[in-house]
Length: 330
Length: 236
Image 1 (cartoon, each protein chain N blue to C red):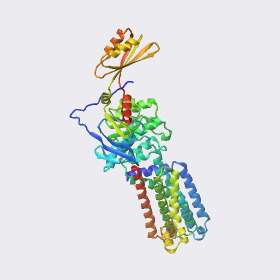
Image 2 (cartoon, chains in turn green, cyan; image 1 turned 90 degrees about the vertical axis):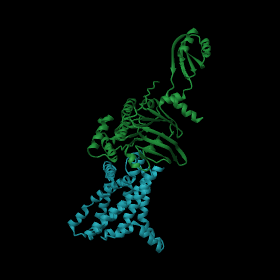
Image 3 (tube, chains in turn orange, purple; image 1 turned 120 degrees about the vertical axis):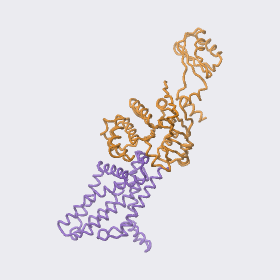
Image 4 (cartoon, chains in turn brown, cyan; image 1 turned 180 degrees about the horizontal axis):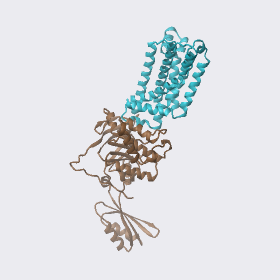
């Protein structure tokens, strides 16, 4: 799997870091059951933060609280400088929210729906008309502007949902599973749109599609069982967790001697060999911090095998995710 | 205010874009037309008594039916998340929805205005009772709508909202009729809290301030309860 990590743009001193989302010790109980516990994190201007976690991890609850849909049982949150409890209306003016189930009125046309969404967000007159036109073209739904929402496919409904979330130019966009259940071409379109929006807005998005998060998001917050397991840049998460290097070697020839010799290399922790048709696949685990590839290649050749391929297997976000969420369950 | 009107406008358009509203209006006009056309009072007294009686009776069913969808459907489809995360106060949402219901009732009543025109054409009606009657019907509709809206805020099921709304509306209408079976003090109390006790006076052209104040109070209480119920959703 190819992971395209966007390098965090470390802003210069002049380009001040502005915190737009500040969540402190958020806890929410449904009855006696804690949906989230002690969730804290910050997000700055122009940052895209991905919420990762299995179902029931508390992603939606956290987003609902940040969107001002419901208050936390305890803890505080500020959005764009406004407290979500005491200055709820002001805070909500700066938030665009796409819930997990897209809140669409099926009986309305796309344009009249967007007009309604813009009006209740306080837009009026020519500015409202301009913004509606802008979001329709930004989301590429011009062809469907006069279509009744009930007749739209899932993908277009999702786009209309994103359009309503950003119609009032909010500083913060909260998108709950924006690409779930839609066809791959539109997934690509929505991802591009989110990346484009991320330059000006602070975006929080949740997903359980890991490659998606690693592609779009600068920072990742991993949640499990209602708790934050990790918040960091994906590459930092990698560094912290990578206890071993995994190297895969493909070769041809009798493996016995090679296995023995590979195991003798200082720093190699384990070697396994799998026969696949005519070739042999060695999986070597080595201590981190040194490049073993050259040494391993030499050893294979000296053992009389034909070296066909060798590659270091990087830990993917998927591995991180599994590692973080499984570690907790133990 | 603008938010309220935007919400009311959306609901009103929705009412008139679904066939069920037209069916309800047609049935209303049929029932009221029957009450008007077949009542002796229409011909003997050139009054609207026949229409008013049947109209009030129909409102008992209409109130919960018009309001059952308003909040329950938002909850069911998840569109409530749009309303409650927009910079709109909960009370603006509730009043917007309520105004839409009032709008439909007003339109329905307006469609019956040809009855007094007919009376004036063929006779010489007393305008006091007619104006009072229309005010009475409007207020009665407003009371029933507020109760129905409250019921709609309690659940995500339209049927359940209709049932609860009907129970509220029917009990406050018929509670006075239970009075006969009880002792004097209890009977008097039940008659006073029943909205049906105050209704006939409107049709006689008597503008009883007690009646108006009582109706308006019920409306305020139920609007308040609806706002509270909507707020409590956030905490659930």
